[in-house]
Image 1: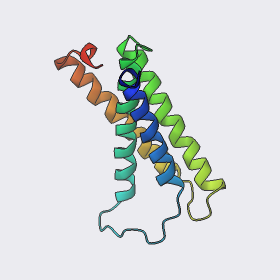
Image 2: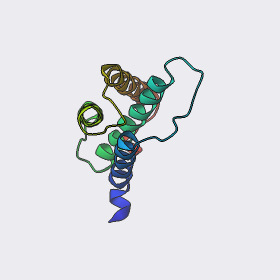
Image 3: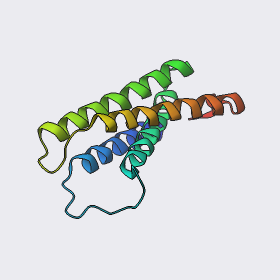
Image 4: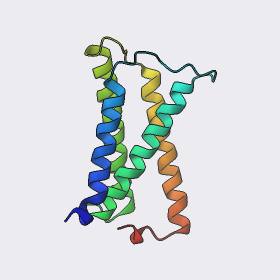
Length: 129
């Protein structure tokens, strides 16, 4: 049974990791000399979040169609990002919500969608189990 659910387990664990990292207080933030580095991190996190949830939906047969699986994965990732920004703004004292973070999350989701459409052109996505 775990083998059939491995992508949902992975997606769930990744989501828990994102929630934890987003809401934990950082004692000493890492200093990076790259402009808007935190936005690049948001893009990467939500790119992978969308990919993992897409594979989870496709692997279990919840969404046989490519567009439906991608839409579901995108909605999960986007809603997660919005909820976390609200949680940072209203519950975590060491963090604050940011509209630019939500926009960066959206960019990561869009890049994931574009990536998946390109992969679909070249590989049979029905082989993802």
